[in-house]
Length: 238
Image (cartoon, rainbow, N blue to C red; front, top):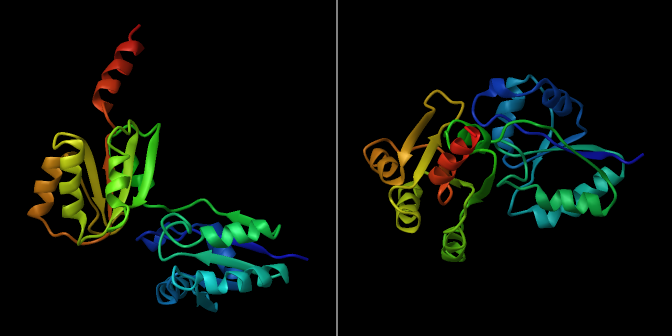
């Protein structure tokens, strides 16, 4: 009998956000592959689970992906987790899923934690249509990617690190205009969770005087978002 691959989302901060189904999958897995076995070890210890795990990350996935495919073909149930959130969303996982499907193996993905959803919902910006951009390229391809977003009408979502957040906001001010609405969230689900809403200029100034720590989610209004909102409200009155 063939095994299967299960992608299991893990909490983005608060360990209490783990689901019962995720715990069952971790408990019953034949083997667990983790982006960082040390961080996953903390979660497993919290759940009182004594399970073996090996590393699966951007630097070794091409070397071990076929080994994992063979394990599944031999009947093992393999669980893939990232450090936080859902595997393959700005984290390793896409390559393994693709190779498993090419080998006609069963792939499951549990619903669960991902940072951009709460950041989008609490931003107050339109959430019916959005463009998830993840992490922007640091150097090569960054300018082209940003230029392609100038006329994007949907709400845009980005991930950013603490040491680049101010630089990115400055770029956005130049690209989209300082008055474009945005929302920046950090440390989601943790003790020091914070969200700053306002224009790009206001948010940039607020973060300049604050403590810039934690992983950030930037939610930026699309082109003419405010104008479209007014038009939608007018139509609702007809």
